[in-house]
Image (cartoon, rainbow, N blue to C red; front, top):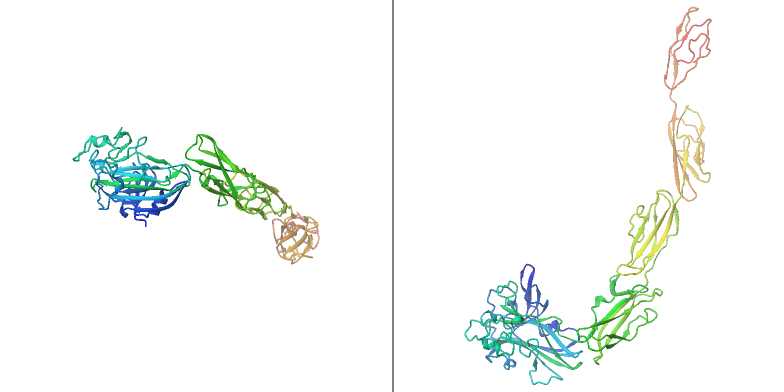
Length: 596
């Protein structure tokens, strides 16, 4: 069961603790590479254990588990408050041999893990913190913890060897062995209680003073230590991680163990994300014919001699068909912590995603140490389906493309495309244009695929000459059309035309009309032209009626008519002053009839 979260933050620094977990949850939290958990047991008040996440606090481990002698949740918070809870739980008899100063202990919390190591050494990282540093340094309340390990090859009696020791010594890590060197004010505090822990004690350089701290509540902490011991690969070992209050149940202490750090010096593939790339949403992938995946085998502990590791393969991919054949081993040079080999896909016909499983075999007879699976994807393809084509001016063509999934497209020129990033854009060129498609596969170094299409423009035109004209009422004339004789012509409206379906019909308009000719080319393109025909609207009436005058006299003839745009002529011209004006002066010699 996971409890609520407790935390304290200051300037984005925070220690967050989730209390009350099961033995299995705690064990799986700290288990790392090369360790197989067989069983786990938790002997602890449920309030005294938890998981933690640390950011910018005296706890330099980023996450892991905490076992404490009080409430685990109280480890998060500002230091000035007193962190002390007596849980009234039992102590641990296994501490009697080294607690020092007293054999009385209480508030014990222990996590017991049975495990099988795949390497020849086991280790993990931890920090110890205590409120006893407040005033009990070098006193009789020597809160302590231990990591007891037992198993084949460890010649000791139960409970085993304590590997929670000051680095380079056999001195247990406790309040009296790692501190500031300043004796506390509590009765019974004496520097002798510290120096008696062993040569060099107290180790002040390994101590972190947290007085007045704002993110973690214990008064002091050790620096990060590594607990380790040699083991025999493939055998079963028992480790007991335990902590107790010494002398009384006041002033809490806690041990923080880094998540995933209970590990051996075994070999494993590097993190999964480093093998191949995420391609088309599929992680750990390579593409046939493109860049290979680099597979790295790593170990935490370099060896003094070269290490030969074997690996085997499986999956649906076929060697020398889907990928370049691999050897069955890899050598990590002496003093090195890793070695790599490449997996290269072979460009073959499309056959779907194939898997290549790699199994790393232990050099210490523990079977398979690690495995990884690489997805081998087909060579990407893309080609333009639409052939080179021609379209009518103003029309668009939808360019069709066949391509494998996940490709990213770019077209040029982009100016006459609806979207140059689409797989299948529409083109509306004004002139004949060559469009170039570039298709690439994101997340890979595959060579971009390039294809092109030519979109031509069919030139279809028709013109009426002249475009506008004026005719007399009832007059007929042939419309002059300039255009290809192979076009099919149609006129609208069809009234007053000799034939509305020929290129140059005869028109006899009675009213002003705009005629539109539509020319249909054999390729389907259409062109249009128009002519505006006006009907001349004029009249001329002689208003001066038939009359008689004396010989030699002059008469002014008056007429009604358009004085602009119309020409006039009188017949006969004899006796007329000016024969081409609307209202002339006439001096006839004899009687005569004059016509306008």
